[in-house]
Length: 162
Image (cartoon, rainbow, N blue to C red):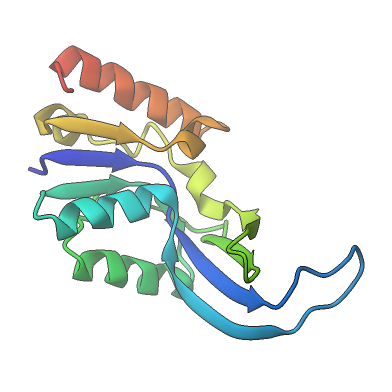
């Protein structure tokens, strides 16, 4: 069983480097465009796994092709993705990030299937067998994901997790 359970979002980040942010209704040309896995929970899970800490991620992805790539990237860094739920109707989450030369980021977020993370998909045994539970703040924004986060907290509390 994993030492740490992380609950929150998995997204595809599309990061565009701009010379300057356009005015309202304007246009901007990107000097670079990079796509990579993101989401604060997924990023945290990957960082922990890269440090050699056994980590599992609870989230929800669509059944789209994007989800396969995100799962593969997480698995390749050592994150246990067996607790990631799948939602057949809603697309996986995506964030468009505009970055200006001064490092300022403007994000346009589609949370997608992340919000569909459900209490029914939680594995109480996995949560109770872990040592720590880490919740991403986004997980508390809207139900049913907020309900799943609160349920995970209750399970973790009863199991004496840190």
